[in-house]
Length: 220
Ligand SMILES: [Zn+2]
Image 1: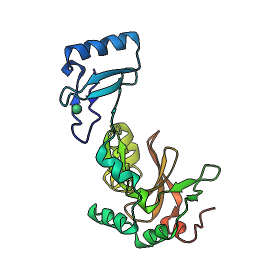
Image 2: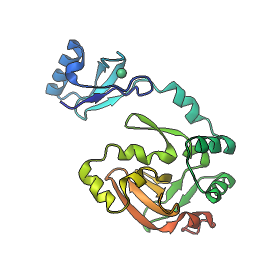
Image 3: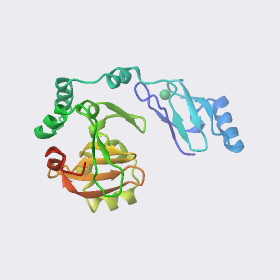
Image 4: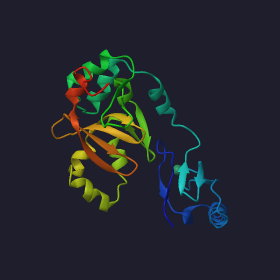
């Protein structure tokens, strides 16, 4: 059977198998599978914390939020706080874009592909928020690495044709539309690409970061 991952990554995050569960829990999982149940509780064999589990989707959900994260996430960061975070994480976002973001207070949207919904640009504060992807915490701006972690080998090869995987892991996300993300090509630090997190593919756009900075030339 497939592994289960403890969703409490901030204090455990252990990977385990159904056979590692207590007898009560493993019997319960097997029973739930045979009955087609989509909702049940199990206990992580390592940290003993209760986990909500869906045996149909094979999906584990934490029942408590990460208290450390809640604090950081909810609070809007000042420009200085955001810059400190970027510096600590060694993230180089071009100064022109930082200035552009810090001057705008309202939500910014750009239309990248004709006939499609506009992409919303993350604010400077949002770029420095922690997000949870597959039970691991990432800074929003670096979250592409989280999505790529579980990409199957055969898809990797497809992506490699466009951008080497190692480079792609380091690309910076600046906006989103539904499950699509707008990111900057790490190699030239300006070309904008789209990463589709659902179907897992990347696509070059005809725009550069400067087009956004220059008065949002990209269709308003
Ligand atoms: Zn655990």
